Length: 257
Image (cartoon, rainbow, N blue to C red; front, side, top):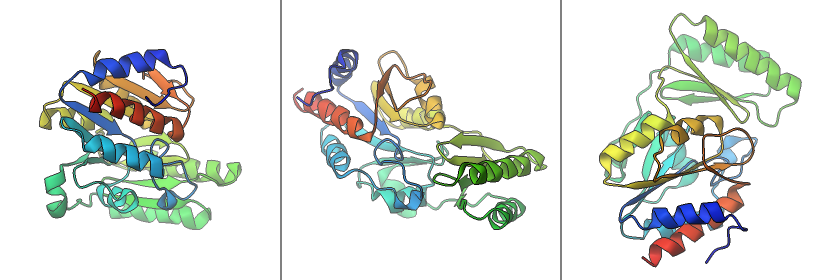
């Protein structure tokens, strides 16, 4: 069985999870399945992670979902998801079942003036990348010099704070987002639970926004934080490579039921 480097509490938790006939495996993308990149368009799932998730998908009673801050169209492009995966995008706002992909169309609810404001920031402070989402806008500063990133984030916060309508600000690893919806990854997981007949969930994520997902997990679920930082998750691994080992460990347990 795939080794978890002596992480006995996690092995015990996964063993308990594996006895359930219906299991949800919910996974963040960036920093969890795919190493973080300065340009998020360059993010790709580790080949060994992709192999593990595909193998889990093939087990009866296992439901797989990506749960990401990326918009639906973005995650379709960078992740090339398996046809049977559920996709939860835009921090829990977009919940798309496999059979809905072909007909799903993301709405565009970002105010034009807000979009213009973001582009003005990128023009005034060269370097940051703007990501347009159906329900918000994000400015990416990963890889920039500290003073440039700080200036871009300060200008973004000021713009969003002074916007006449309420906006939700979320920060993460080199990203600051302003959204028109307060839905979270916790809402996304609850939506999946309403759709799927599952009794146990594994949720793995690395960023601040994943904490909303960890917060809604029950006593029979397993939450795993990737990397350092405070967390509501009950378990932790170091990086996406360790995530791969966790997924193979779970696969071996589920496949032998």
